[in-house]
Image (cartoon, rainbow, N blue to C red; front, top):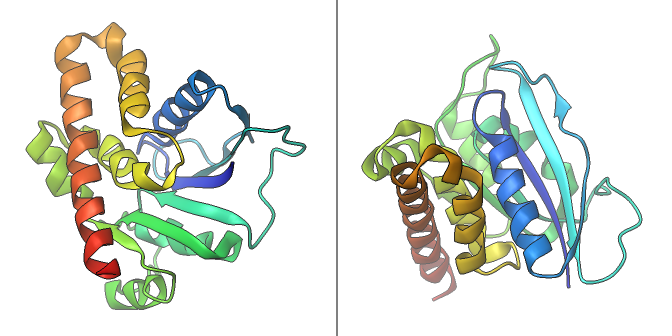
Length: 198
């Protein structure tokens, strides 16, 4: 088993938290993990991405070669497009569709959508709406982790344990809210995926 995952977004969207949960859960599964340091500008609004490589055998490089990513998990739609050259032909794009307009020539929504639709059955999520339903807009990163969960090679139960480990210092209410967000993302993702494969 090997999974190459790119996690992308902009500073302040919780990219590091997503990566931390996946790393923790993979290690608890007995898998090897290599993570490239987050590249880009870590301040709020700057582009951020991380390469995660998960395998049941030895991993020799932190970086994912172009054309070999199994999953692009993005919390911002333009950032998903930025890393499409890394996607394998059967790789999956899972992205939030709410734009973070941080450049003057940010593309129109229909242009982004058209490019995403060229990939293999993309999963497009209204993360902010689901996060608010879960209790806080700040849980949109966990919504997106839930949406990507079916494609990570790690069980949802273990990812939920990773969320608990990450947020337990902030109290049980925070843990419950983030797990609720995760489950909302997972449910809508599975629903979309079943619709495209039926």
